[in-house]
Amino acid sequence: MIAPTTAIEICRFLHDSALLVLWGTAAFIGFLLPRSLQAETVSRLRSLPVGAAVLSLATTVVTLPLQAASIGSGWGDAVDWETLGAVLFDSSVGAAWQAQAAAGVALLLAFAVGRKHRMAAVAVCAAMAIATLSLTGHASMGEGWQRIAQRSNDIVHLLSGGAWLGALLPFLVVMKMLDVAELHGPAQLALRRFSSAGHGAVVLVVATGVVNSWMVLGRWPTDWSAPYQLMLSLKIAAVMVMTGLAVVNRYVFVPIIARNPAAAIRAIRLASVVEILLGLAAVGLVSVFGTLDPF
Image 1 (tube, rainbow, N blue to C red):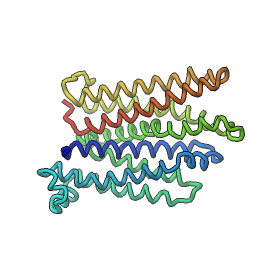
Image 2 (cartoon, rainbow, N blue to C red):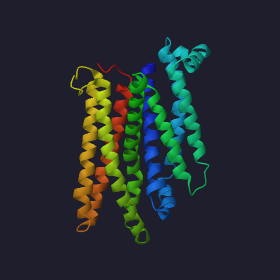
Image 3 (cartoon, rainbow, N blue to C red):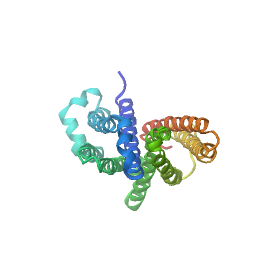
Image 4 (tube, one colour):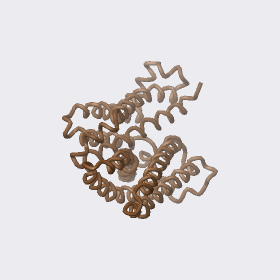
Protein backbone atom coordinates (compact mmCIF):
# COMPACT_ATOMS: atom_id res chain seq x y z
CA MET A 1 0.00 0.00 0.00
CA ILE A 2 1.30 3.45 -0.86
CA ALA A 3 2.06 5.96 1.89
CA PRO A 4 -0.50 8.69 2.65
CA THR A 5 2.05 11.35 1.62
CA THR A 6 2.42 9.74 -1.81
CA ALA A 7 -1.36 9.61 -2.19
CA ILE A 8 -1.52 13.32 -1.28
CA GLU A 9 1.05 14.13 -3.96
CA ILE A 10 -1.00 12.24 -6.57
CA CYS A 11 -4.15 14.06 -5.45
CA ARG A 12 -2.34 17.41 -5.59
CA PHE A 13 -1.22 16.71 -9.14
CA LEU A 14 -4.71 15.74 -10.32
CA HIS A 15 -6.37 18.61 -8.46
CA ASP A 16 -3.95 21.32 -9.55
CA SER A 17 -3.80 20.09 -13.15
CA ALA A 18 -7.59 20.03 -13.41
CA LEU A 19 -7.95 23.57 -12.05
CA LEU A 20 -5.14 25.07 -14.12
CA VAL A 21 -6.37 23.48 -17.36
CA LEU A 22 -9.98 24.45 -16.64
CA TRP A 23 -9.05 28.06 -15.81
CA GLY A 24 -6.98 28.51 -18.97
CA THR A 25 -9.52 26.78 -21.19
CA ALA A 26 -12.52 28.68 -19.81
CA ALA A 27 -10.70 32.03 -19.83
CA PHE A 28 -9.66 31.60 -23.46
CA ILE A 29 -13.18 30.64 -24.52
CA GLY A 30 -15.03 33.12 -22.32
CA PHE A 31 -12.84 36.21 -22.80
CA LEU A 32 -10.74 35.85 -25.96
CA LEU A 33 -12.74 33.73 -28.36
CA PRO A 34 -15.15 35.47 -30.78
CA ARG A 35 -18.70 34.58 -29.76
CA SER A 36 -19.30 32.89 -33.11
CA LEU A 37 -16.71 30.23 -32.20
CA GLN A 38 -17.53 29.67 -28.53
CA ALA A 39 -20.29 27.08 -28.88
CA GLU A 40 -18.37 25.14 -31.54
CA THR A 41 -15.19 25.12 -29.44
CA VAL A 42 -17.00 23.93 -26.31
CA SER A 43 -18.69 21.23 -28.38
CA ARG A 44 -15.35 19.99 -29.74
CA LEU A 45 -13.86 19.90 -26.25
CA ARG A 46 -16.78 17.63 -25.28
CA SER A 47 -16.90 16.92 -21.54
CA LEU A 48 -13.42 18.25 -20.68
CA PRO A 49 -14.53 21.39 -18.76
CA VAL A 50 -17.15 19.57 -16.67
CA GLY A 51 -14.82 16.62 -16.14
CA ALA A 52 -12.04 18.90 -14.91
CA ALA A 53 -14.41 20.62 -12.46
CA VAL A 54 -15.69 17.28 -11.10
CA LEU A 55 -12.13 15.99 -10.76
CA SER A 56 -11.04 19.10 -8.85
CA LEU A 57 -13.91 18.73 -6.36
CA ALA A 58 -13.46 14.95 -6.01
CA THR A 59 -9.75 15.31 -5.25
CA THR A 60 -10.56 18.03 -2.72
CA VAL A 61 -12.93 15.67 -0.88
CA VAL A 62 -10.39 12.83 -0.90
CA THR A 63 -7.56 15.05 0.34
CA LEU A 64 -9.10 15.56 3.81
CA PRO A 65 -8.88 11.89 4.92
CA LEU A 66 -5.47 11.66 3.26
CA GLN A 67 -4.28 14.60 5.33
CA ALA A 68 -5.69 12.97 8.46
CA ALA A 69 -3.79 9.78 7.65
CA SER A 70 -0.60 11.75 7.02
CA ILE A 71 -0.85 13.92 10.14
CA GLY A 72 -2.06 11.00 12.28
CA SER A 73 -0.57 7.56 12.69
CA GLY A 74 -1.45 6.04 9.33
CA TRP A 75 -4.31 4.91 7.14
CA GLY A 76 -6.53 4.10 10.11
CA ASP A 77 -6.81 7.79 10.93
CA ALA A 78 -8.22 8.47 7.45
CA VAL A 79 -11.58 7.20 8.71
CA ASP A 80 -11.25 8.23 12.35
CA TRP A 81 -13.84 10.93 13.04
CA GLU A 82 -11.89 12.47 15.90
CA THR A 83 -8.77 12.86 13.78
CA LEU A 84 -10.77 14.14 10.82
CA GLY A 85 -12.48 16.72 13.03
CA ALA A 86 -9.17 17.86 14.50
CA VAL A 87 -7.63 18.29 11.05
CA LEU A 88 -10.69 20.06 9.67
CA PHE A 89 -11.34 22.51 12.51
CA ASP A 90 -8.07 22.85 14.41
CA SER A 91 -5.39 23.18 11.73
CA SER A 92 -4.36 25.54 8.96
CA VAL A 93 -4.63 22.58 6.57
CA GLY A 94 -8.30 22.21 7.53
CA ALA A 95 -8.99 25.91 7.06
CA ALA A 96 -7.44 25.77 3.59
CA TRP A 97 -9.47 22.63 2.82
CA GLN A 98 -12.71 24.40 3.73
CA ALA A 99 -11.88 27.27 1.36
CA GLN A 100 -10.97 24.83 -1.42
CA ALA A 101 -14.17 22.83 -0.92
CA ALA A 102 -16.32 25.98 -1.06
CA ALA A 103 -14.51 27.08 -4.23
CA GLY A 104 -15.05 23.64 -5.76
CA VAL A 105 -18.80 23.77 -5.12
CA ALA A 106 -18.99 27.29 -6.59
CA LEU A 107 -17.11 26.05 -9.64
CA LEU A 108 -19.63 23.31 -10.29
CA LEU A 109 -22.51 25.76 -9.82
CA ALA A 110 -20.95 28.04 -12.45
CA PHE A 111 -21.93 25.49 -15.10
CA ALA A 112 -25.57 26.34 -14.36
CA VAL A 113 -25.06 29.89 -15.69
CA GLY A 114 -26.64 30.59 -19.07
CA ARG A 115 -24.69 29.40 -22.09
CA LYS A 116 -23.80 32.93 -23.20
CA HIS A 117 -21.77 33.67 -20.04
CA ARG A 118 -21.07 30.15 -18.79
CA MET A 119 -17.38 29.89 -19.68
CA ALA A 120 -16.67 33.36 -18.27
CA ALA A 121 -18.35 32.35 -15.00
CA VAL A 122 -16.43 29.08 -14.93
CA ALA A 123 -13.17 30.97 -15.52
CA VAL A 124 -13.85 33.34 -12.61
CA CYS A 125 -14.72 30.49 -10.23
CA ALA A 126 -11.71 28.45 -11.40
CA ALA A 127 -9.48 31.46 -10.71
CA MET A 128 -10.93 31.70 -7.21
CA ALA A 129 -10.29 28.01 -6.65
CA ILE A 130 -6.69 28.41 -7.83
CA ALA A 131 -6.21 31.31 -5.40
CA THR A 132 -7.06 28.97 -2.49
CA LEU A 133 -4.03 26.82 -3.39
CA SER A 134 -1.81 29.55 -1.95
CA LEU A 135 -3.27 28.96 1.53
CA THR A 136 -0.89 26.06 2.10
CA GLY A 137 2.71 25.23 1.27
CA HIS A 138 5.69 27.55 1.04
CA ALA A 139 3.50 30.55 0.19
CA SER A 140 2.32 30.48 3.81
CA MET A 141 5.73 30.19 5.42
CA GLY A 142 6.25 33.85 6.23
CA GLU A 143 4.43 36.24 8.54
CA GLY A 144 2.61 39.53 8.02
CA TRP A 145 3.44 41.38 4.83
CA GLN A 146 5.91 38.71 3.74
CA ARG A 147 3.15 36.09 3.76
CA ILE A 148 0.80 38.40 1.86
CA ALA A 149 3.51 39.10 -0.73
CA GLN A 150 4.34 35.40 -1.14
CA ARG A 151 0.71 34.39 -1.49
CA SER A 152 -0.01 37.20 -3.96
CA ASN A 153 3.01 36.27 -6.07
CA ASP A 154 2.03 32.59 -5.92
CA ILE A 155 -1.51 33.36 -7.09
CA VAL A 156 -0.26 35.40 -10.06
CA HIS A 157 2.21 32.61 -10.90
CA LEU A 158 -0.51 29.96 -10.83
CA LEU A 159 -3.02 32.01 -12.81
CA SER A 160 -0.53 32.99 -15.51
CA GLY A 161 0.76 29.42 -15.75
CA GLY A 162 -2.76 28.03 -15.95
CA ALA A 163 -3.74 30.62 -18.55
CA TRP A 164 -0.80 29.46 -20.67
CA LEU A 165 -1.25 25.71 -20.16
CA GLY A 166 -5.04 25.56 -20.27
CA ALA A 167 -5.46 27.84 -23.29
CA LEU A 168 -3.35 25.50 -25.41
CA LEU A 169 -6.23 23.00 -25.56
CA PRO A 170 -8.83 25.32 -27.15
CA PHE A 171 -5.96 26.81 -29.17
CA LEU A 172 -5.44 23.42 -30.82
CA VAL A 173 -9.19 23.18 -31.48
CA VAL A 174 -9.26 26.64 -33.07
CA MET A 175 -6.25 25.74 -35.23
CA LYS A 176 -8.39 23.04 -36.86
CA MET A 177 -11.08 25.63 -37.62
CA LEU A 178 -8.70 27.42 -39.98
CA ASP A 179 -9.56 24.71 -42.52
CA VAL A 180 -13.28 25.60 -42.42
CA ALA A 181 -14.05 28.48 -44.77
CA GLU A 182 -16.84 30.10 -42.72
CA LEU A 183 -14.78 29.83 -39.50
CA HIS A 184 -11.42 30.91 -40.93
CA GLY A 185 -11.77 34.66 -40.22
CA PRO A 186 -12.94 34.35 -36.57
CA ALA A 187 -10.32 31.64 -35.98
CA GLN A 188 -7.55 33.96 -37.18
CA LEU A 189 -8.82 36.68 -34.82
CA ALA A 190 -8.86 34.21 -31.92
CA LEU A 191 -5.30 33.12 -32.64
CA ARG A 192 -4.09 36.73 -32.73
CA ARG A 193 -5.72 37.34 -29.35
CA PHE A 194 -4.15 34.14 -28.02
CA SER A 195 -0.73 35.33 -29.19
CA SER A 196 -1.09 38.73 -27.50
CA ALA A 197 -2.35 37.27 -24.22
CA GLY A 198 0.24 34.51 -24.40
CA HIS A 199 3.11 36.99 -24.40
CA GLY A 200 1.85 38.45 -21.14
CA ALA A 201 1.27 35.04 -19.56
CA VAL A 202 4.79 33.84 -20.38
CA VAL A 203 6.38 36.99 -18.98
CA LEU A 204 4.35 36.71 -15.76
CA VAL A 205 5.15 33.01 -15.32
CA VAL A 206 8.90 33.63 -15.61
CA ALA A 207 8.92 36.81 -13.49
CA THR A 208 6.80 35.42 -10.64
CA GLY A 209 8.73 32.15 -10.75
CA VAL A 210 11.99 34.01 -10.19
CA VAL A 211 10.44 36.04 -7.36
CA ASN A 212 8.99 32.91 -5.75
CA SER A 213 12.32 31.07 -5.85
CA TRP A 214 14.09 34.06 -4.33
CA MET A 215 11.49 34.52 -1.57
CA VAL A 216 11.65 30.86 -0.54
CA LEU A 217 15.38 30.19 -0.96
CA GLY A 218 16.98 33.61 -1.01
CA ARG A 219 19.16 32.43 -3.92
CA TRP A 220 19.11 30.22 -7.01
CA PRO A 221 18.36 26.49 -6.50
CA THR A 222 21.91 25.30 -7.01
CA ASP A 223 22.14 22.71 -4.21
CA TRP A 224 20.92 19.64 -6.07
CA SER A 225 21.60 17.39 -3.10
CA ALA A 226 18.38 18.87 -1.67
CA PRO A 227 15.38 17.18 -3.42
CA TYR A 228 13.40 20.44 -3.33
CA GLN A 229 16.06 22.38 -5.20
CA LEU A 230 16.70 19.58 -7.69
CA MET A 231 13.01 19.30 -8.61
CA LEU A 232 12.63 23.08 -8.68
CA SER A 233 15.53 23.20 -11.15
CA LEU A 234 13.82 20.56 -13.30
CA LYS A 235 10.62 22.60 -13.22
CA ILE A 236 12.52 25.72 -14.29
CA ALA A 237 14.09 23.75 -17.14
CA ALA A 238 10.64 22.54 -18.26
CA VAL A 239 9.29 26.10 -18.25
CA MET A 240 12.31 27.37 -20.19
CA VAL A 241 11.77 24.70 -22.88
CA MET A 242 8.07 25.63 -23.00
CA THR A 243 9.06 29.27 -23.43
CA GLY A 244 11.43 28.37 -26.26
CA LEU A 245 8.73 26.36 -28.01
CA ALA A 246 6.24 29.22 -27.64
CA VAL A 247 8.74 31.66 -29.17
CA VAL A 248 9.50 29.28 -32.06
CA ASN A 249 5.79 28.78 -32.66
CA ARG A 250 5.11 32.50 -32.81
CA TYR A 251 8.16 33.82 -34.62
CA VAL A 252 9.28 30.87 -36.77
CA PHE A 253 6.29 28.69 -37.65
CA VAL A 254 3.53 31.33 -37.82
CA PRO A 255 5.30 33.38 -40.56
CA ILE A 256 5.72 30.17 -42.57
CA ILE A 257 1.93 29.63 -42.71
CA ALA A 258 1.64 32.00 -45.68
CA ARG A 259 4.15 29.94 -47.71
CA ASN A 260 3.49 26.39 -46.51
CA PRO A 261 0.36 26.31 -44.33
CA ALA A 262 0.05 22.54 -43.95
CA ALA A 263 3.63 22.01 -42.72
CA ALA A 264 3.58 25.09 -40.48
CA ILE A 265 0.29 24.15 -38.83
CA ARG A 266 1.53 20.59 -38.19
CA ALA A 267 4.67 21.99 -36.56
CA ILE A 268 2.66 24.40 -34.42
CA ARG A 269 0.33 21.63 -33.26
CA LEU A 270 3.24 19.32 -32.38
CA ALA A 271 5.07 22.05 -30.46
CA SER A 272 1.85 22.91 -28.61
CA VAL A 273 1.29 19.29 -27.56
CA VAL A 274 4.87 19.15 -26.24
CA GLU A 275 4.21 22.38 -24.32
CA ILE A 276 1.16 20.79 -22.69
CA LEU A 277 3.13 17.70 -21.68
CA LEU A 278 5.95 19.82 -20.25
CA GLY A 279 3.42 21.97 -18.38
CA LEU A 280 1.85 18.89 -16.79
CA ALA A 281 5.33 17.64 -15.88
CA ALA A 282 6.01 20.97 -14.15
CA VAL A 283 2.75 20.66 -12.20
CA GLY A 284 3.72 17.12 -11.20
CA LEU A 285 7.09 18.30 -9.90
CA VAL A 286 5.47 21.08 -7.86
CA SER A 287 3.01 18.55 -6.40
CA VAL A 288 5.98 16.68 -4.94
CA PHE A 289 8.48 19.37 -3.95
CA GLY A 290 5.77 21.75 -2.73
CA THR A 291 5.66 19.87 0.57
CA LEU A 292 9.44 19.38 0.98
CA ASP A 293 11.99 21.31 3.02
CA PRO A 294 13.71 23.76 0.62
CA PHE A 295 17.11 23.16 2.20
